[in-house]
Image 1: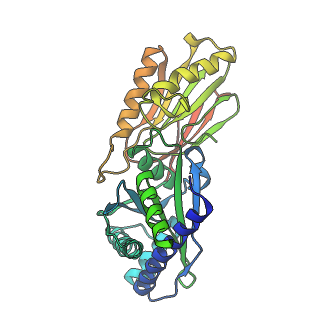
Image 2 (image 1 turned 120 degrees about the vertical axis):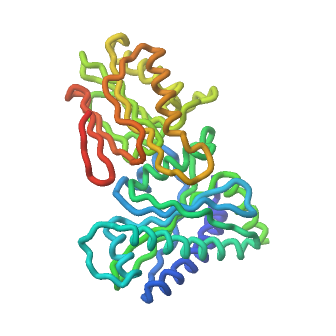
Length: 201
Length: 151
Protein backbone atom coordinates (compact mmCIF):
# COMPACT_ATOMS: atom_id res chain seq x y z
CA UNK A 1 0.00 0.00 0.00
CA UNK A 2 2.95 2.35 0.69
CA UNK A 3 6.54 2.03 -0.46
CA UNK A 4 9.31 3.12 1.89
CA UNK A 5 9.82 6.46 0.14
CA UNK A 6 6.12 7.30 0.41
CA UNK A 7 6.12 6.21 4.00
CA UNK A 8 9.11 8.49 4.73
CA UNK A 9 7.42 11.42 3.02
CA UNK A 10 4.26 10.86 5.03
CA UNK A 11 6.26 10.56 8.25
CA UNK A 12 7.99 13.87 7.51
CA UNK A 13 4.65 15.54 6.80
CA UNK A 14 3.24 14.20 10.04
CA UNK A 15 6.38 15.18 11.89
CA UNK A 16 5.91 18.83 10.88
CA UNK A 17 2.24 18.75 11.82
CA UNK A 18 2.87 17.07 15.16
CA UNK A 19 5.67 19.50 16.00
CA UNK A 20 3.23 22.39 15.58
CA UNK A 21 0.66 20.59 17.73
CA UNK A 22 3.32 19.99 20.37
CA UNK A 23 4.23 23.67 20.37
CA UNK A 24 0.61 24.69 21.02
CA UNK A 25 0.35 22.17 23.87
CA UNK A 26 3.61 23.46 25.27
CA UNK A 27 2.27 27.03 25.17
CA UNK A 28 -1.02 26.06 26.82
CA UNK A 29 0.66 24.19 29.65
CA UNK A 30 3.73 26.42 29.79
CA UNK A 31 6.01 23.43 29.94
CA UNK A 32 8.31 21.39 27.73
CA UNK A 33 6.62 18.82 25.50
CA UNK A 34 8.70 15.97 24.11
CA UNK A 35 7.70 14.39 20.83
CA UNK A 36 8.54 10.88 19.61
CA UNK A 37 9.38 10.09 15.99
CA UNK A 38 6.06 9.39 14.26
CA UNK A 39 5.17 5.83 13.32
CA UNK A 40 3.47 4.99 10.04
CA UNK A 41 1.92 1.56 9.98
CA UNK A 42 0.02 -0.17 7.24
CA UNK A 43 -2.25 -2.41 9.25
CA UNK A 44 -4.62 -5.22 8.26
CA UNK A 45 -8.05 -4.49 9.79
CA UNK A 46 -7.86 -7.82 11.65
CA UNK A 47 -4.67 -6.65 13.42
CA UNK A 48 -5.76 -3.18 14.51
CA UNK A 49 -5.98 -4.50 18.07
CA UNK A 50 -2.17 -4.83 18.02
CA UNK A 51 -1.90 -1.05 17.59
CA UNK A 52 -4.92 0.30 19.44
CA UNK A 53 -6.07 -1.08 22.79
CA UNK A 54 -9.31 -1.33 24.73
CA UNK A 55 -7.90 0.60 27.72
CA UNK A 56 -10.18 3.47 28.68
CA UNK A 57 -9.01 6.80 27.27
CA UNK A 58 -10.27 10.21 26.28
CA UNK A 59 -10.51 10.60 22.52
CA UNK A 60 -11.08 13.94 20.81
CA UNK A 61 -12.01 13.12 17.24
CA UNK A 62 -12.15 15.34 14.16
CA UNK A 63 -13.19 14.65 10.63
CA UNK A 64 -10.98 16.35 8.03
CA UNK A 65 -12.68 18.64 5.55
CA UNK A 66 -11.27 20.95 2.90
CA UNK A 67 -9.46 20.71 -0.38
CA UNK A 68 -8.77 17.01 -0.26
CA UNK A 69 -10.79 14.30 -1.84
CA UNK A 70 -12.08 11.56 0.37
CA UNK A 71 -11.53 12.30 3.98
CA UNK A 72 -10.01 11.11 7.12
CA UNK A 73 -9.90 11.55 10.84
CA UNK A 74 -7.50 13.06 13.31
CA UNK A 75 -7.68 11.81 16.87
CA UNK A 76 -6.12 13.09 20.05
CA UNK A 77 -5.80 10.14 22.41
CA UNK A 78 -5.18 10.74 26.11
CA UNK A 79 -4.92 7.63 28.31
CA UNK A 80 -7.16 7.69 31.36
CA UNK A 81 -4.38 8.30 33.89
CA UNK A 82 -3.19 11.33 31.92
CA UNK A 83 -6.60 12.93 31.47
CA UNK A 84 -6.94 14.43 34.93
CA UNK A 85 -3.30 15.50 35.01
CA UNK A 86 -3.75 17.23 31.66
CA UNK A 87 -6.94 19.10 32.56
CA UNK A 88 -5.54 19.95 36.01
CA UNK A 89 -2.47 21.49 34.38
CA UNK A 90 -4.72 23.39 31.99
CA UNK A 91 -7.24 24.54 34.61
CA UNK A 92 -4.70 25.19 37.39
CA UNK A 93 -6.07 22.48 39.67
CA UNK A 94 -4.18 19.88 41.70
CA UNK A 95 -6.68 17.28 42.95
CA UNK A 96 -5.93 13.98 41.13
CA UNK A 97 -8.50 11.69 42.69
CA UNK A 98 -11.68 13.20 41.32
CA UNK A 99 -14.44 12.51 38.83
CA UNK A 100 -14.28 14.12 35.40
CA UNK A 101 -16.66 17.07 35.12
CA UNK A 102 -18.01 19.19 32.31
CA UNK A 103 -15.06 21.51 32.89
CA UNK A 104 -12.69 18.65 32.06
CA UNK A 105 -14.66 17.83 28.96
CA UNK A 106 -14.60 21.42 27.75
CA UNK A 107 -10.87 21.61 28.48
CA UNK A 108 -10.24 18.39 26.54
CA UNK A 109 -12.25 19.64 23.57
CA UNK A 110 -10.39 22.94 23.65
CA UNK A 111 -6.97 21.31 23.89
CA UNK A 112 -7.92 18.95 21.07
CA UNK A 113 -9.22 21.79 18.93
CA UNK A 114 -6.09 23.88 19.28
CA UNK A 115 -3.68 20.98 18.76
CA UNK A 116 -5.50 19.46 15.81
CA UNK A 117 -5.97 22.84 14.11
CA UNK A 118 -2.22 23.41 14.43
CA UNK A 119 -1.51 19.92 13.09
CA UNK A 120 -3.77 20.36 10.06
CA UNK A 121 -2.67 23.96 9.37
CA UNK A 122 0.97 22.97 9.26
CA UNK A 123 0.45 19.93 7.02
CA UNK A 124 -1.94 21.82 4.72
CA UNK A 125 0.48 24.74 4.38
CA UNK A 126 3.21 22.34 3.31
CA UNK A 127 0.88 20.84 0.72
CA UNK A 128 -0.46 24.30 -0.27
CA UNK A 129 -4.07 23.29 0.34
CA UNK A 130 -6.72 24.02 2.95
CA UNK A 131 -7.63 21.34 5.49
CA UNK A 132 -10.16 22.09 8.18
CA UNK A 133 -11.21 20.03 11.17
CA UNK A 134 -14.91 19.37 11.79
CA UNK A 135 -16.30 20.29 15.19
CA UNK A 136 -14.78 17.80 17.61
CA UNK A 137 -16.46 14.85 19.21
CA UNK A 138 -15.29 13.71 22.65
CA UNK A 139 -15.70 10.21 23.96
CA UNK A 140 -14.20 8.50 26.98
CA UNK A 141 -14.18 4.85 26.00
CA UNK A 142 -12.16 2.07 24.34
CA UNK A 143 -9.90 3.36 21.52
CA UNK A 144 -10.27 0.11 19.53
CA UNK A 145 -14.06 0.44 19.62
CA UNK A 146 -13.81 4.04 18.39
CA UNK A 147 -11.40 3.12 15.58
CA UNK A 148 -13.53 0.28 14.28
CA UNK A 149 -16.67 2.44 14.41
CA UNK A 150 -14.89 5.14 12.41
CA UNK A 151 -13.66 2.62 9.83
CA UNK A 152 -17.05 0.95 9.51
CA UNK A 153 -18.72 4.33 8.93
CA UNK A 154 -16.44 4.97 5.96
CA UNK A 155 -16.58 2.83 2.89
CA UNK A 156 -14.41 0.03 4.13
CA UNK A 157 -16.36 -2.74 2.45
CA UNK A 158 -13.60 -3.36 -0.06
CA UNK A 159 -10.65 -2.26 2.00
CA UNK A 160 -8.79 -4.59 4.32
CA UNK A 161 -5.83 -2.38 5.18
CA UNK A 162 -5.54 1.00 6.85
CA UNK A 163 -2.70 3.45 7.26
CA UNK A 164 -2.30 4.53 10.86
CA UNK A 165 -0.09 7.49 11.61
CA UNK A 166 0.76 7.91 15.29
CA UNK A 167 3.02 10.21 17.22
CA UNK A 168 3.44 10.41 20.96
CA UNK A 169 3.66 13.69 22.86
CA UNK A 170 4.51 13.78 26.52
CA UNK A 171 5.31 16.12 29.36
CA UNK A 172 7.74 14.86 32.00
CA UNK A 173 6.88 17.69 34.35
CA UNK A 174 3.18 16.80 34.52
CA UNK A 175 3.56 13.08 33.65
CA UNK A 176 1.11 13.45 30.80
CA UNK A 177 1.26 11.30 27.70
CA UNK A 178 -0.92 11.61 24.63
CA UNK A 179 -0.99 10.41 21.05
CA UNK A 180 -2.02 12.08 17.84
CA UNK A 181 -3.47 9.68 15.30
CA UNK A 182 -4.18 10.39 11.66
CA UNK A 183 -6.45 7.98 9.82
CA UNK A 184 -6.69 8.97 6.16
CA UNK A 185 -9.04 7.03 3.94
CA UNK A 186 -7.73 5.67 0.66
CA UNK A 187 -8.65 8.59 -1.69
CA UNK A 188 -7.22 11.10 0.77
CA UNK A 189 -4.06 9.06 1.28
CA UNK A 190 -3.54 8.74 -2.48
CA UNK A 191 -4.00 12.46 -2.97
CA UNK A 192 -1.61 13.42 -0.17
CA UNK A 193 1.00 10.97 -1.47
CA UNK A 194 0.60 12.46 -4.95
CA UNK A 195 1.12 15.98 -3.58
CA UNK A 196 4.16 14.90 -1.59
CA UNK A 197 5.69 13.22 -4.64
CA UNK A 198 5.19 16.42 -6.64
CA UNK A 199 6.87 18.41 -3.88
CA UNK A 200 9.91 16.15 -3.99
CA UNK A 201 10.39 16.39 -7.76
CA UNK B 1 -7.82 -12.99 19.76
CA UNK B 2 -10.36 -12.52 16.99
CA UNK B 3 -9.65 -9.27 15.10
CA UNK B 4 -12.01 -7.25 12.90
CA UNK B 5 -13.39 -9.43 10.10
CA UNK B 6 -11.83 -12.59 11.57
CA UNK B 7 -13.32 -15.71 13.20
CA UNK B 8 -12.31 -18.66 15.33
CA UNK B 9 -13.92 -22.02 16.03
CA UNK B 10 -12.95 -24.25 18.95
CA UNK B 11 -13.35 -25.19 22.61
CA UNK B 12 -10.81 -22.84 24.23
CA UNK B 13 -11.74 -19.32 25.38
CA UNK B 14 -11.62 -16.73 22.60
CA UNK B 15 -11.84 -12.95 22.70
CA UNK B 16 -12.57 -9.82 20.69
CA UNK B 17 -11.47 -6.52 22.17
CA UNK B 18 -13.09 -3.12 21.73
CA UNK B 19 -16.27 -3.94 19.81
CA UNK B 20 -17.77 -0.61 18.74
CA UNK B 21 -20.27 -0.69 15.91
CA UNK B 22 -18.99 -4.20 15.09
CA UNK B 23 -20.75 -7.34 16.28
CA UNK B 24 -19.26 -10.23 18.21
CA UNK B 25 -21.39 -13.16 17.02
CA UNK B 26 -21.11 -16.39 18.97
CA UNK B 27 -22.68 -19.59 17.69
CA UNK B 28 -22.54 -22.29 20.32
CA UNK B 29 -23.26 -26.01 20.45
CA UNK B 30 -24.58 -26.70 23.99
CA UNK B 31 -24.31 -30.46 23.46
CA UNK B 32 -20.66 -30.61 22.44
CA UNK B 33 -19.46 -27.44 24.21
CA UNK B 34 -17.85 -26.14 21.08
CA UNK B 35 -18.53 -22.99 19.12
CA UNK B 36 -17.32 -20.09 17.07
CA UNK B 37 -16.85 -16.34 17.34
CA UNK B 38 -16.98 -13.94 14.37
CA UNK B 39 -16.03 -10.23 14.58
CA UNK B 40 -18.45 -8.76 12.05
CA UNK B 41 -17.75 -5.26 10.73
CA UNK B 42 -20.41 -4.52 8.10
CA UNK B 43 -23.96 -5.66 7.28
CA UNK B 44 -23.59 -6.45 3.60
CA UNK B 45 -20.84 -8.27 1.64
CA UNK B 46 -22.24 -7.11 -1.72
CA UNK B 47 -21.06 -10.40 -3.16
CA UNK B 48 -17.52 -10.37 -1.76
CA UNK B 49 -16.22 -13.73 -0.57
CA UNK B 50 -12.64 -13.02 0.55
CA UNK B 51 -13.41 -12.44 4.23
CA UNK B 52 -16.71 -14.13 5.08
CA UNK B 53 -16.54 -13.27 8.81
CA UNK B 54 -16.37 -9.54 8.03
CA UNK B 55 -19.98 -9.24 6.83
CA UNK B 56 -23.22 -10.17 8.57
CA UNK B 57 -24.78 -11.74 5.48
CA UNK B 58 -21.91 -14.20 5.00
CA UNK B 59 -20.63 -14.70 8.56
CA UNK B 60 -23.63 -16.56 9.97
CA UNK B 61 -23.73 -19.34 7.38
CA UNK B 62 -19.93 -19.54 7.35
CA UNK B 63 -19.74 -20.01 11.12
CA UNK B 64 -22.55 -22.62 11.12
CA UNK B 65 -20.79 -24.65 8.42
CA UNK B 66 -17.47 -24.43 10.27
CA UNK B 67 -18.99 -25.68 13.52
CA UNK B 68 -20.89 -28.48 11.77
CA UNK B 69 -17.61 -29.63 10.19
CA UNK B 70 -16.46 -30.30 13.77
CA UNK B 71 -19.33 -32.76 14.16
CA UNK B 72 -22.12 -30.52 15.49
CA UNK B 73 -25.70 -30.65 14.22
CA UNK B 74 -27.02 -27.31 12.98
CA UNK B 75 -30.47 -27.74 14.54
CA UNK B 76 -29.01 -27.78 18.06
CA UNK B 77 -26.99 -24.58 17.72
CA UNK B 78 -27.77 -21.39 19.65
CA UNK B 79 -26.37 -17.88 19.33
CA UNK B 80 -25.41 -14.82 21.36
CA UNK B 81 -24.75 -11.37 19.93
CA UNK B 82 -22.79 -8.49 21.45
CA UNK B 83 -21.92 -5.03 20.12
CA UNK B 84 -23.49 -2.76 17.52
CA UNK B 85 -22.98 0.40 19.56
CA UNK B 86 -23.34 3.94 18.18
CA UNK B 87 -20.34 5.73 19.63
CA UNK B 88 -20.58 8.95 17.61
CA UNK B 89 -23.53 11.20 17.19
CA UNK B 90 -22.06 14.12 15.32
CA UNK B 91 -20.23 12.85 12.22
CA UNK B 92 -21.50 12.43 8.72
CA UNK B 93 -21.42 8.99 7.11
CA UNK B 94 -23.08 5.68 7.83
CA UNK B 95 -23.44 6.29 11.50
CA UNK B 96 -26.27 3.92 12.23
CA UNK B 97 -23.97 1.11 11.11
CA UNK B 98 -24.23 -0.50 14.57
CA UNK B 99 -28.01 -0.82 14.28
CA UNK B 100 -27.75 -2.08 10.72
CA UNK B 101 -25.22 -4.70 11.82
CA UNK B 102 -27.55 -5.94 14.59
CA UNK B 103 -30.49 -6.11 12.21
CA UNK B 104 -28.52 -7.92 9.49
CA UNK B 105 -27.13 -10.53 11.92
CA UNK B 106 -30.59 -11.22 13.37
CA UNK B 107 -32.07 -11.61 9.90
CA UNK B 108 -29.47 -14.26 9.01
CA UNK B 109 -29.89 -16.09 12.32
CA UNK B 110 -33.61 -16.25 11.67
CA UNK B 111 -33.03 -17.52 8.16
CA UNK B 112 -30.95 -20.42 9.50
CA UNK B 113 -33.27 -21.04 12.47
CA UNK B 114 -30.61 -20.29 15.08
CA UNK B 115 -32.18 -19.17 18.34
CA UNK B 116 -30.70 -16.08 20.05
CA UNK B 117 -30.34 -17.03 23.73
CA UNK B 118 -28.67 -13.81 24.90
CA UNK B 119 -27.68 -10.41 23.59
CA UNK B 120 -25.95 -7.28 24.79
CA UNK B 121 -26.30 -4.84 21.92
CA UNK B 122 -26.76 -1.18 21.04
CA UNK B 123 -26.01 1.70 23.38
CA UNK B 124 -23.06 4.04 23.08
CA UNK B 125 -20.25 2.11 24.76
CA UNK B 126 -17.49 -0.13 23.42
CA UNK B 127 -17.31 -3.73 24.67
CA UNK B 128 -14.59 -6.37 25.09
CA UNK B 129 -15.81 -9.96 25.13
CA UNK B 130 -14.43 -13.36 26.07
CA UNK B 131 -16.37 -16.46 25.02
CA UNK B 132 -15.92 -19.68 27.01
CA UNK B 133 -17.27 -22.63 24.96
CA UNK B 134 -16.60 -25.16 27.71
CA UNK B 135 -18.40 -23.14 30.38
CA UNK B 136 -21.84 -23.56 28.78
CA UNK B 137 -21.00 -20.91 26.20
CA UNK B 138 -20.70 -18.15 28.78
CA UNK B 139 -19.55 -14.72 27.53
CA UNK B 140 -18.02 -11.98 29.67
CA UNK B 141 -18.79 -8.46 28.45
CA UNK B 142 -16.56 -5.66 29.75
CA UNK B 143 -17.01 -1.93 29.15
CA UNK B 144 -14.31 0.77 29.37
CA UNK B 145 -15.48 1.86 32.83
CA UNK B 146 -14.49 -1.59 34.15
CA UNK B 147 -18.04 -2.93 34.45
CA UNK B 148 -18.21 -6.68 33.71
CA UNK B 149 -21.35 -8.72 33.10
CA UNK B 150 -21.91 -12.29 31.98
CA UNK B 151 -24.41 -13.42 29.40
